[in-house]
Image (spheres, rainbow, N blue to C red):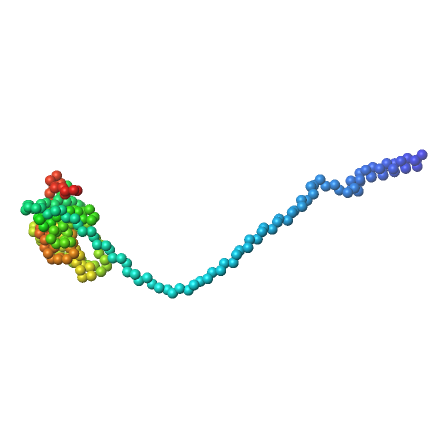
Length: 228
């Protein structure tokens, strides 16, 4: 009776032991997905670079010594027709070129003979007096101009008529292209430029005859320039 119980107990232990250890004895199962298989990337097609052949042709070095074009001559002034009969002196009234040194609402005034001078405008639109008998002799307001490095200016003070002028004579390479006159009467202060092509002394003498009449006039009494 004891032996039969012992065999039964032994069989029971073996079955329990086998049931508890079966996971260790069976192969392990994995729930992980199988590793992905990488497909090799197709190689990019190679682009063949064509060979470039460069041929250098030697050339002789040379300097272009062509002179720069000279400035074109200024256009000839169109002068009003000279009066057909003798006329008296006429006036030219204009704004002083030095307004800070002049009283406001005052113009300069000069007198001229219309048989010798024509009141017109130059190529820049400024009123000027052009001499009828001396080609290129022009008296106009001095608006300022530069001089090349080879230029120089001589200054002197002269009394012309009743007016004291600062006279500035320009010289470029030994040639005098123009002379500036700056003066006033205590009411206005203004400057004029006398330019010429040739016959400089005759032109300056004629222009100084006009500059010696310089005076001032209120704006309300100023005479307008025809066509301005």
